[in-house]
Image 1 (cartoon, helix red, strand yellow):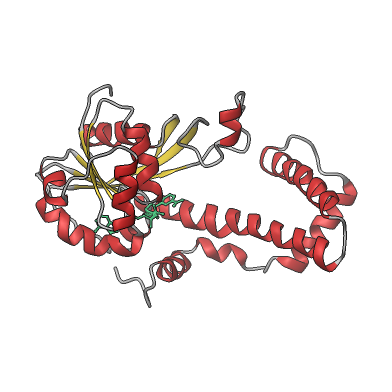
Image 2 (cartoon, rainbow, N blue to C red; image 1 turned 180 degrees about the vertical axis):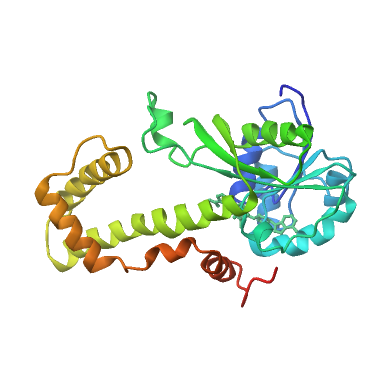
Length: 284
Ligand SMILES: NC(=O)c1ccc[n+]([C@@H]2O[C@H](COP(=O)([O-])OP(=O)(O)OC[C@H]3O[C@@H](n4cnc5c(N)ncnc54)[C@H](O)[C@@H]3O)[C@@H](O)[C@H]2O)c1
């Protein structure tokens, strides 16, 4: 796992491209940075990195990290995958396009996907930098989820080394299938968890701006109870009180649709992904 690889980062000046590149410069890997937009090119140069044209960068790459928007992946893979050397790996950072079958693939090129878990809400953080790093990839350790469509252990090693480098510091890499990764992200963590995060903010807004509760009071009680809700709900740290359980039932009846678990069905996953990828339907 301590081997160094030739890594091409495509979309190096974007949000993820900059994050993964900032980490790759600290490794022994040989990295080529590719970016097409003027703003992204400038960000790459301002960060002290040299740009390489795509054809040169991918020609001898062991692994190509595609940090381009999901909507650009069909065109980018159509252009770049035919140029890869046999045995090379294409790593996307989100499963949607791969699961929807939108990527150009090749028998002798390995398709892989890896998504950061982001630092756990229960992570034991000890430094200011760890507290500040809510996204991960800077100071707070996180896990990553990866899928590799190959039985070759050497390909998995390259993916793991790359994932550990781009999302560093990484504790564990969890291996799943591309479909399972799509069931986790978007369904579990965006459709459910991020939606609930945004809902909490809307509820806070309602308490403050419609009900007229002082904002500091509302924010303080919500932040503390959010921790209790997560610690009790996800880890069973303490039982919810009897009155709280009654209020929770009222909330579930009033807010949550009875058939909400349908979001985990294959056809609903396809509907969700089609919306994300701006498609009418997902064709497999
Ligand atoms: N932003 C996040 O929080 C986040 C988190 C996890 C995974 N992802 C995934 O990471 C990937 C990139 O997302 P992002 O948010 O960083 O996108 P972004 O829009 O911030 O950056 C994409 C970059 O790719 C560049 N680009 C587009 N086409 C290109 C091409 N043909 N060649 C070279 N560069 C090209 C753009 O100029 C841009 O700089 C997506 O698959 C996304 O789902 C994003």
